[in-house]
Image (tube, rainbow, N blue to C red):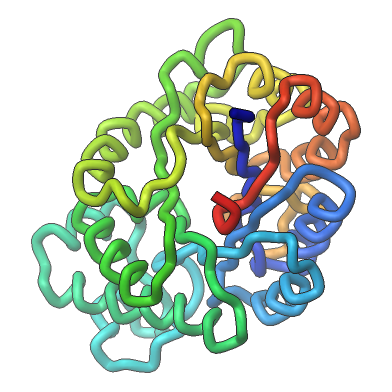
Length: 282
């Protein structure tokens, strides 16, 4: 059986710069999947792009950190500052979801609204993932599972990146990326215990190498990936500035975009017998 690989573009809908990169890298490159930040400025444009590209799997990139909420329910007030913007970072929100029932209820209402926003526009989400991987927090994961079941969404991102990805023969990763992967691994194991049915992959790649995803990285994926089904997360844009301040502007988004369109990457996967799919095709 051929190995299957999902190559997902996070932050779809963040800006025109991101949207153009996603569409181009899907048509000319190896992007098979993308997740929309439904409360971001270019989300409506992302929906139009998705409808023009039916072979692109589209999910929801749940975002309770940046911008203003989708939900108009007064219940979400615990998540907001005096200007009506999200006010917590991912660490604070993770802790509050454990200890504060009002925050859990607020988060559930907002994430529900973000998913429904996409469905109301005629897109059936293939899967769910999240900004800064907040869904991996066990208290949040249970909420996300409930919403996936409510809306009959079949898959949730599994944020388990094998430890060997951060060492040779893989290309050099970043110290911060390795720390992030190390933090997520035990959470991912707990997530699998919480609900195995919604997890469709064996692992993920791209956490340790965030900001360093290039042609050599994808060559390593084609050579050293042992999983039957895996995902690669990417953050492409047509420039290193994604067009919206303070959201993932430091990673080399333009390099990722150019890499995703590089014919050598597609050839690596062809030679390795790896089938490129999206979550809806599993």
